[in-house]
Length: 205
Image (spheres, rainbow, N blue to C red):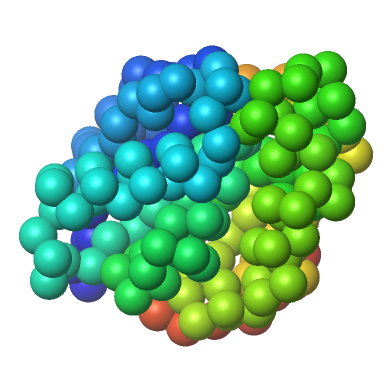
């Protein structure tokens, strides 16, 4: 089975370099990996505007006839969801993996008044919009990887959606979710999934 190019989308205050251990791991197994630095990534920008940066990057970097896989960490998972659900990404993305993403918001977002953080609060208009037709993610292979020990995504199970497959691993810190060997193995396994709807609603490791 040919491997799709994989686009990585980082979280708040991060850069693409955050994924270096994971991209190196995947490249050793034959994947081509790509990513961009979202600007600004500190919450000053609305997430939908960051999603437009992602869309422009993909359009400029990957040939239009090439299907892609998408991996988003934390805020990057929401940026990626907006691209998939609102900017036409659903027609290009075959596998979509989020890692510790506040799909249903996080109480930690109340610590900042920045626009992007406000959008990550529980029941924000941004999240209500994405979640009202979340079932469209059933059209692609969607996987959420999360930890019940997350101190940034509060409550931690906010990372779970009622579609695709949710995989729980007990990693003690939010930031370690992209460097833990279990996460990297799970991402590789999700990127190898045949193109059909995931059958298991919840898996724990």
